[in-house]
Length: 151
Image (cartoon, rainbow, N blue to C red; front, side, top):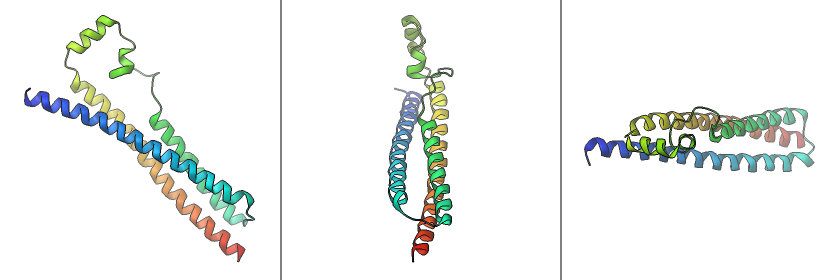
């Protein structure tokens, strides 16, 4: 196997692995957001909180819901768009077209297309983490206001 062959194979595997890692992180963050929202609801539904605490906490909840939306968008399959690589593309081809494509070395194009997909997923994940951090600050401030109002 030539150096180019080895490099293409390694790059292709790396991009596919990065997509899988990003999807795993996204799933974990979605679960965390769900647990956080459930915890906020459990605490807030029975508490008598000052209006300022409700407003700040509500803003935090809105940010968490926004982060969840970004995460869901990052992992949503784009089957309506033009298929560029792998499974979605193969579903549109005949058996003969699949054999013809597999006979060609299209790893360079696949690496470029998969890299764009990975970058879009990573950017969505990064923005969602930023929203979760901002929501956490707001929820802490809301808790401090609530505790201060209870004293």
